[in-house]
Length: 158
Image (cartoon, rainbow, N blue to C red; front, side, top):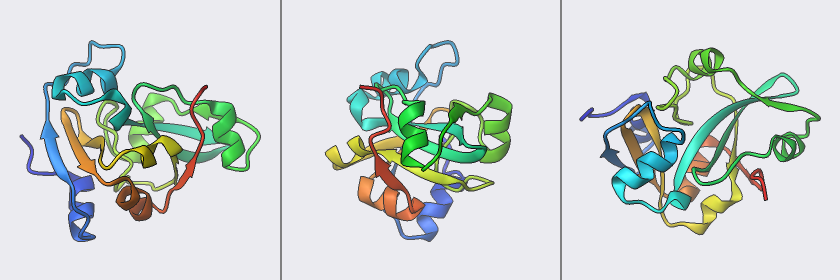
């Protein structure tokens, strides 16, 4: 198991308490977040995925539960924009500095605004990608939101 990543190093430096959890990553599954939750025996509602999007040509990081879908319309509205679209994979990897399946919202190479699904506040601890495929971190939602200077919003489909 990796000892850490750029994301965990940034959290360590800031004194943010978190844990690390390794699992067997598989690129051959439809929902990597749900597969990770199952591999670790975690409720999928506590497993959050990091999605990269554009809102009116501005990069945005959306962090939502792995068992939910992002509403691009709600994302655009909460960011004060008119149009949102998902970022293509090569651009998401370039901007974040991480590989898809391992993208963390923490310590991205080219930071962007972050929006957490308001569901984050329903849990004591969240599981989020740690910046490497097969490695998750657990963190208190308030600590994650504060560290990322993120907003909380209803950005999931109903």
